[in-house]
Amino acid sequence: MSKLLAEMTNFQILAQFLGVILKDGDRVKYLKVAIASQEYRVKLPKALSQSFDQKLSIGSWLKIEGSQTLDRKKGILKLEASSFSVVNAPNSELNKLEPSLTQSADSQPVADKNKNKAPCILICQKSDCWQHGGKEVYQKLEQELRDRGLSDRVQIQKTGCQKQCKQAPNLVIMPNKDRHSRVKLSQVDSLLNRYFGLN
Image (cartoon, rainbow, N blue to C red; front, side, top):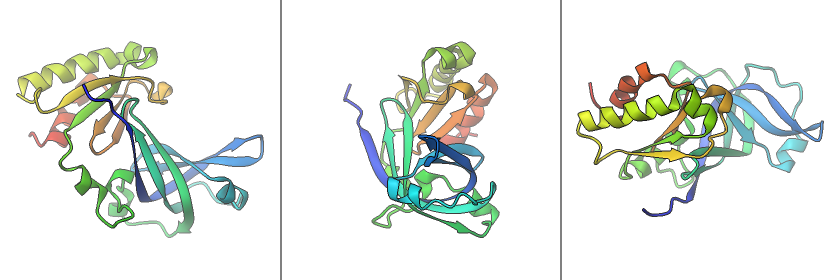
């Protein structure tokens, strides 16, 4: 099996501001934002952190640009901002944007770049996820893929911690890099239908 490496691309997203995570008591290290009802942390480099406006209101909409790195082995998506600005509330379509579906630096949609990559489901096998239903979700995914004749086209990989322990069990669907938390057995069918075009 080939070694999976971290892959980096640029992103541009619209996100709703949820708060900050501080370092050393006063420096803003991360923005907490919501994108399509998922919570993400966006790292701020020192220059942006020093100019951060503490008066930014919870619920404000931000346009954030930067780089995203996905550690495919661990299934962890890391976002780092190069710039951000407050924008008017987007329409419902823009609210559905995910980092993986926005334009990259060379203006080719990231989703198009990923089109030819083999689909893969990365599921956390660490104790929190496994003990909160992850093992059963993994077994159900394997069974459904076999039953649908997809086991040779869609790979399932167990990963290390995806850093969302309180929202266990967790999985990431590649190549879109879509993260799903608190996954239940009853959601397996709809996830497979959504990502692999089965109705």
